[in-house]
Length: 229
Image (tube, rainbow, N blue to C red; front, top):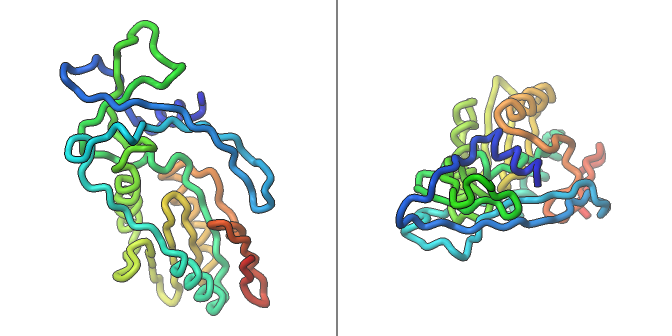
């Protein structure tokens, strides 16, 4: 829980203020879960502070909520394409991804349960960035990531807007986004290393490594081909 709140501070997610008269304040709650590896072993215990989504009202607390998500068929196509071009795929997990997305609406949330300020018990937090549970959080994160990748010379897919590509001379780099999970690969291995460094400088990463487990599938990339279990 302390680690989660430290992420809020590092990402400058919110600002404490006295509750404005007549302002709507969204409640918050803690959600706990265990993160597992591809063999089902618990590798990390996570605590996440989320907004009580059921208390949001459309047109008041949020507007557009749309954010594209890669379809399973697109992931399968990318695996086949990478195998055909002898391209190894990697994956990265952006830590607290939604906390990176800026929001346009004026949103206030309650103080975290168990971490109320005893000196200012009636204060609330004004959000600058998206909080997990907010309706607009996926959209805000996708827009932040999209703008960053386009700045770095990537082109967004015309059919699949979760696919980003970048061509350098004869080398092709592909990047597929599934919420806060990113799959990437290149015909030039050095570009993968450079991409990992670039992303780590901009966003806090919790994992960068070879693609082995994704959306419930175990994936093995071998010389003989790519196998999905």
